[in-house]
Image 1 (tube, helix red, strand yellow):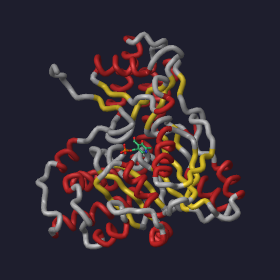
Image 2 (tube, protein in one colour; image 1 turned 45 degrees about the horizontal axis):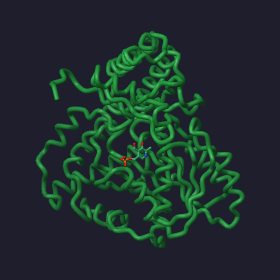
Image 3 (cartoon, protein in one colour; image 1 turned 180 degrees about the horizontal axis):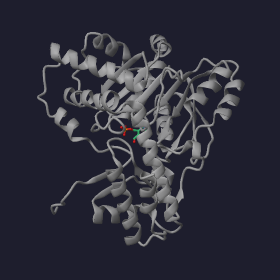
Image 4 (cartoon, protein in one colour; image 1 turned 90 degrees about the vertical axis):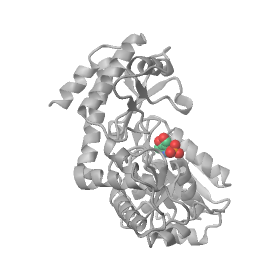
Length: 388
Ligand code: PLP
């Protein structure tokens, strides 16, 4: 492979760019994970993650990818044959449903359009029909990374409350946490799922559950088999700063730094408005190019990722290959049934105006080189927004 000058542009909707500060923190020497220094590190990370999830409840940190945290949410709280209700809104929702089925859960889908978010009214109708309260959990994706659509979790909670339904609410915050406002306690979420490699600006390798008292109570009677993911063991060890097995010590150094940056230095409200501003600039570029946003409801446009439909007859994989070859930039692919049809721009994590401008330049030049029909001027439209 020949030398590529400059930095690679990692504009996937995760993994995202890891700031040098975090890389340096991760490069600290690995320490004894049963030492007092390690316990202090754990405590800072756990407290910091409570702030990020906006919860006073417990947060669990696992070595693992977010798919593990999906599994953990289910196996800790449910029993074989339990009914769970979820939404057919995108690739990651479908993947979580697949995990649930593989554990013998009875998964019911609320049909949907992948271009829209989870529908609280359709949920209300299902819950009102479920007079015997057979549905034990409702699963929703806060930000569907495959479509660039954000769902209204507060509205889902309101629908559950209005139906006086006792099901647990489980929410995937993998591409929203640390980039889109997510309020675990205020929205009454029982189990949240997250990963390290997106808004938290870390490499892949950590995953999280934020859990309510109600979820902990459910875990005491749930009978799905579990060992690695068992909350009880984790909570007990965490109380004194330890883990039931060898933790990802170096990633925890990185997490401590990331939380400092997000919560103490930039401040979460500023982080959220930065993401919204960059998402709007990106959409302005897309519209100026004459391309179509995949998401259709403005209230559901994702602040962290934008999915763009390719014109008929053009393949997103070819466009991405041209962009990678010529400009050393990775863009997100079309996932599941959107393969070939949609490409995605990630604008989450550690990104500033010039990085976004560079990203949009790469896309505009790529569209030209790949012969994709478009109108030049998307970058100019984005810059205009960024400077007003
Ligand atoms: N949920 C969402 C919304 C995602 O975007 C992803 C990955 O991109 C996952 C879950 C799965 O995460 P992981 O690949 O870390 O297992």
